Image 1 (cartoon, rainbow, N blue to C red):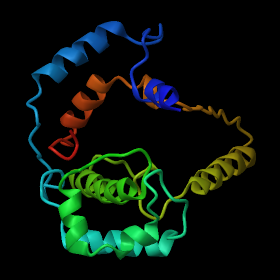
Image 2: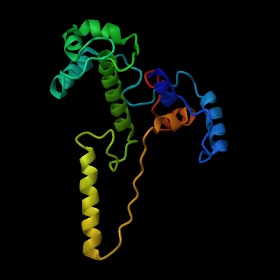
Image 3: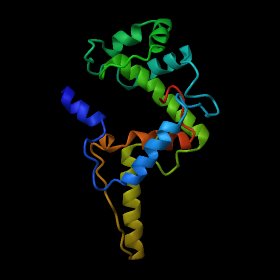
Image 4: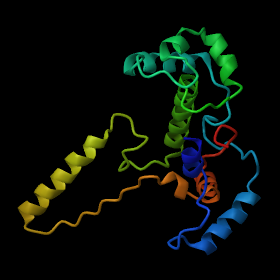
Length: 195
């Protein structure tokens, strides 16, 4: 299992021919030029400010509303166990930002980080309204509805509709980290929590 995750979480050993190697080299140089940790330029300091008790309470409410009875992580903790931990103790724990593979504690911390990224990205205006990911109240089935509307409109106008489907399975290993950090920093999404 660890070999599978290692392959998924690291850049491919051989750069695919479809990659622009000049751009990759440029992005690697730009990444080295970034200040580490990069400054947090989000209006609310979303990527720098400390996690709060209010965020932990909101995270617990979210977990209780969306599935407290999910599978137990490799750490042996369930969401019920984690939610039972006093907020102050969770706050102290989250300051360490420990990461373990798919454990409930990691998922709880990741939920807070996810909300911070959304908050900062929304405040910076970098997520277009046409994007479903990172948008509240939008789901993948919304895309099916949009596609059906486009099909209906094309049929009513008697015009062809061209559709492309991209399967991004295992896209993460193909993501060049330097390019990712440079692009995020260019959008203002940077700071210790991101790095």
